[in-house]
Length: 277
Ligand SMILES: [Zn+2]
Image 1 (cartoon, rainbow, N blue to C red):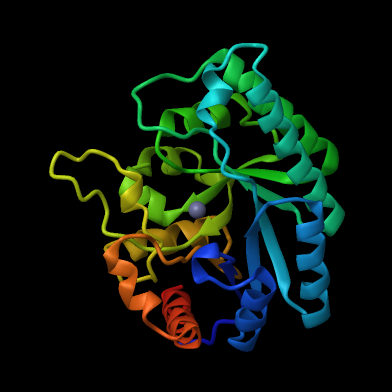
Image 2 (cartoon, rainbow, N blue to C red; image 1 turned 45 degrees about the vertical axis):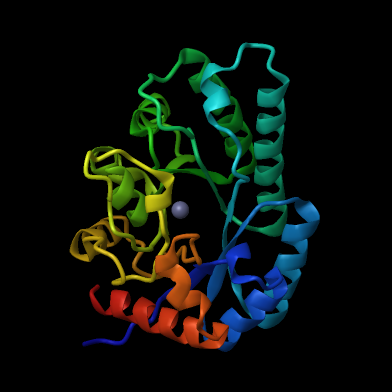
């Protein structure tokens, strides 16, 4: 088996109950090479970037705030809520550019309703994409519940080289987004690797509580499929994990560990994923 030479990246998470800088210090001491952060504001990402530069840590991407993205598709033309969401998404793109991060990950829809994408929604996403293009930042739309919305966005903006996908293998497992991932796998430019127990409801009803962000191999994600996708997307040198302590009792075992022990275990599992490449 040849040794893995690529980077391991991990998400910062407030579920770890440490400040972002404290988390970075811990990641660094466990030889985790990079990280991504949920966007708050320009000052926050500048602080992270300065610290990362000092320590030689790689700032892999910025995750946009968790906006109520359903509004983008269904709120009326004059919605202030939507104007604020778009302004904030643009702000995260411009901040990414300023701190030298080349990708912003965002959601295109939130909600578990059976409904269809709208022309207005596509136009609004297009407005955000225009900012991304202008600043040379790739917008990576994440696979989530409501895959018809991701399908619509990537169909509409297929030719735009700044319209990309972030492949979250946990979301695929618990929101059954296999079809849209396969259809647009050419667009995959970022990874969120994590595990869960799939759709737990007997009636196959999707639920946010199934999105657990467990350590790889603590759930039932099909890692042979994940590895094929990583190789297809040529992202083997940047394995990015999105792990956290979810609210479900299944995560109690993580919460009860000393954080250093948790990170050691996480690093072991990351290495196991890399060994499958
Ligand atoms: Zn994710």
